[in-house]
Length: 189
Image (tube, rainbow, N blue to C red):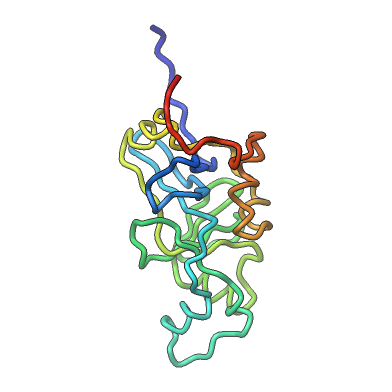
């Protein structure tokens, strides 16, 4: 048997298969921020949580009225881990107090990115989440082997340009897959 290097999926989308039973991930597409031998971290990109940036800013700056544009900027449920912590995915090139460069994208976790977006000085393209999805070492690989997910390289246009309700189908379409034609039954041949 030939030993091969593991294939990691950083900068890929995880597309939930129709039979996904976990309510945290059913009918989701997740952007993988990191995936290595220690585990994986991602952000669900198609599940608005009902809050807007204005709602978050009212908590951070209760004495200031948030700009009106903030009412139309949705916050997403990024995953079931640390749901009180914010993450902003945006194109690289702009750094904030806590920004991790990911190549063509960056992930910022400090409040200053939210204030910059509100003031019109932040990244024009962004996706704001509360919480993230996490997998321990080997956990995601097991889920992939169990056919829980489809994967494809991430596309910035799906992240930033499409309405959230179109992201799952658009990610699957990158693979030539129509999810509505797949069975909700899991199995192996």
